[in-house]
Image 1 (cartoon, one colour):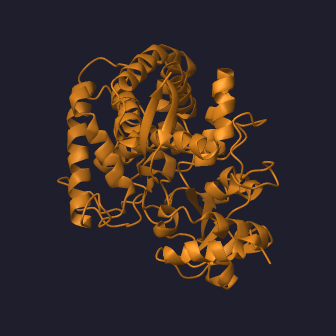
Image 2: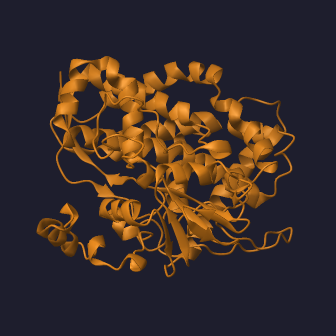
Image 3: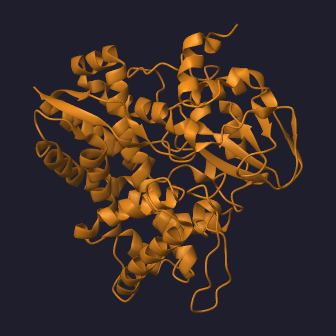
Length: 437
């Protein structure tokens, strides 16, 4: 009998109203349920699928039928073969927030289109993908990252110095969100006093209505239209001014992006906001949690701060801030011995591939001195590999360098509250106390 069918595991899952995956017929397993991720109960589901059915067909889910791709090498195969597996029909299993819906027509009579995809370049195939990505990629190229390092360090220091002492506070809000939102405002040259709007729009885009962010699809649409209107004003101002190095100016002046329609512009904005906000902020929170869960690793860190860059990669692997990406088969094909039909949805579960011990030794362990720590799936592979991966790593590295100058420990004092999403794997609350050196 598997250790994962233990009485304790059954009891814990029962309290959360989530069935033990080993108690279900294999064909009834549907891991695309936000409640599973919110309760951090996905691990045994993916372990069973990797062991028994690595390319698994779910015939009935809230998002329709789909294939789960759960092994590292199969995920890489799908992610790098855009000729067979397309992004153009959407990159998530059910829209960024899990509830695809329709746009109203705009004033120019643009046709209605699905929220899922929005025309963002990550939801495109070559050649259009390559042209639009290239327009903004220089913002996070190594020379520009070097120019940002001092700004990130100064802001991290200011944030950490302002934290409450001797009392519990929400690390997600005061540190993770604040640092990443300040950085995102800089990349957009966005009005700094309004920077929390970026956090709000990111949360709205990636969370279904009715779970604490917005109450209805109508409210979700209205607030995203507000996002579009706000950025359209910035676009118009940048388009009429000489080109600058911020992302909006790059899009407004880029020959392959300057003629985008409004919802394609919104799509690319949301891509850049979510990519620059959710991923880094949730790894910042996850790192604190993992070090508390693994005190020997915290001891290693305190004993050797040179481990910080390697630890950052391990945090990003262990957190896997975006749980999945989706592709659609363009032709009949075969994967893992299964017949995939043209039009089938395939969900690449990065969160599962990052725990595949056939590729990553002892993958369930959090080890800050892990060999080849950057050998993970969290940034994807191929043409859609995360454009801002080096910026994310740099923010985490600098933050931990600054934390280590000030605090002997960031102590987690309560169970974290996690996001209700099958896409963004993150936290809404992580209560901590800081202990000064």
